[in-house]
Image (cartoon, rainbow, N blue to C red; front, side, top):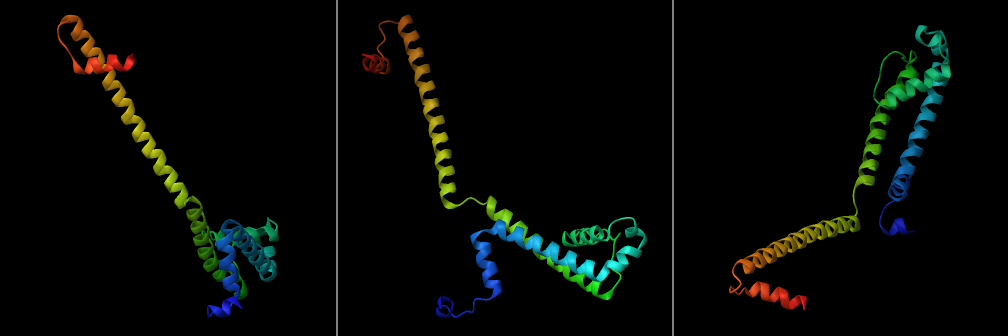
Length: 175
């Protein structure tokens, strides 16, 4: 109903975008896991015989060879030591390479958004910075006043007849 009011149809893509908006880390983890398991299963299904008979993969488990190829392709590393031999396996790997690029961009986006400060956090940092600047200014002012007081006290000892408005004000405040 609400979607019709805003003139669009709630597709699966819309649902994925809403989930990503609400909990981006969970969405990326879920889609990554789903991609890995799905592609691993498809490769195992179509390339099992190849993995069992190829020189490089003869010594390792075919399930691991399929998972290895999936991970290496999804992360866009692509060592080339394990390759699909069937046409369907190659199509799955081409599809996997494109999905890997998309998945990596999603991960970068989520990490970037997690590291971005919201407005309240920015305001807090600004206040902290302003407080530090104010504290430094107050500290310098106090040091200056102490130095000036010491200077005039020493000057008064040398020349007792000299009157200093500043020193008089400091002495009055102490009383």
